[in-house]
Structures are given as C-alpha cells and as structure tokens.
Image (cartoon, rainbow, N blue to C red):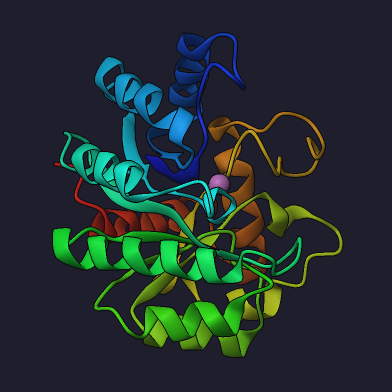
Length: 250
Ligand code: NI
C-alpha cells in the first residue's frame, strides 16, 4: 500500500475524479493527502474527503496567497482544520522564486499558520522555494514537525531538516535527468523519506510534461529503490510507515 502525501485534486484539474481514485487503487495507492492551499480550493477539498475514503486533507494558505489573506480567511481556515480527515496544515511556507515583493506578508502568513499547527498539534507540509534560510529560521521558532514538500536541496540541508524532526517529500523530480537528489537520498536512506506526486504538476519520466496523478507513485518508488539498491517493495513499506508515523489517519 502506497500513500501519496501531497497532491492537488479538484475538478479544476480532473474531469473525472471517480476515475482518478479508481486508477489510484489499481496502482496500489490507497491513501492520498490532498492539499487545499488556496481559498477557492478548500471547500471542495473538504467535500471530496467526505465523498472518498481514500482522501485525507492538508489545508493551509500557500505563500502565493500572501497579501490576499486577512483575519477572516485565517479564522475560516482554523474552522476547517477541525473537520474530519484533516491530517496536516499545508502547504505553507515561503516562495521567493518570483521575487521578494511580498516577503513580509509571506513571513507573517507562514508564521501565523505555524502558530496554528503548534496550537492544534497538527503536522505541517512545507513549501519552500529559493527560501531555505528564512524557512529554517521560522520553523525553529515553533514546536512543529512534518514534511518538507518537494525537497530539492543539498545533503547538508536535508540533514538540517531531519535534525529538526522533518521528513523529506520526494516526487517526480527524482526521475528527471538533471536531478541531483541521489546524494541526499543515499545519505539519508529510507528512514526520513515520504512519497508524493504534487499532481497535477511534476509528472515523473516518462510522463514528464503531462498531467500527473497519484497513480504514478510506484514510478517514484522504483527510482528511489534503484538509487538505494533495494526493492520497490521496501521503499513502499518504509515510506508508508513514515507517513503513518507523521499523519494521524484514524
Ligand atoms: Ni503542491
């Protein structure tokens, strides 16, 4: 049994969600955590989790929402976080890829949601892009743990996150030709990794550029297995156990 710890599932991306879920099951993926990280997504995410046993929720405002979110929206998020099947806050974090214009608003939004995670004792799913130092600095101020989504840093950064109690989310990027995650994966081993797709984005090779789906999780597991010289089954068992230790699926 595989768990996709991070994906985006909504009618905006997929015409036939019944079919997505069926295909997941056929590929051995029986739990997925969908990230509702924009104001417009959240209600639909909650409804999907009610409709399908396979779906769990991570809710939180993405850094790209910074500047649009005020106290009302944060209050609404906190209400939703008490719903059934919510297993994490996320994806939250910092993204300086497109510039640092809203850096203050991003940090404020991130910090507030870290405070919520601490208060509600929920793990966090972290989005950090071109912002590693500031991300680590803020995370250190809160008693939180969880997953660094779409991890792509060095061995040193990987170790730093792990020391802070985080797991690394590995997705389709690991299958790309120019990917240099092998060293970090070799150094870390399976103990601190979880699998994710970030679908509909970042489809693994040979589907790169196409619409991604949780059903491709075994491809990611195979690539990690090749890197470590272990079986795909071992990657599945270990990463699933890791996910079960982070998130409360009960
Ligand atoms: Ni995502």
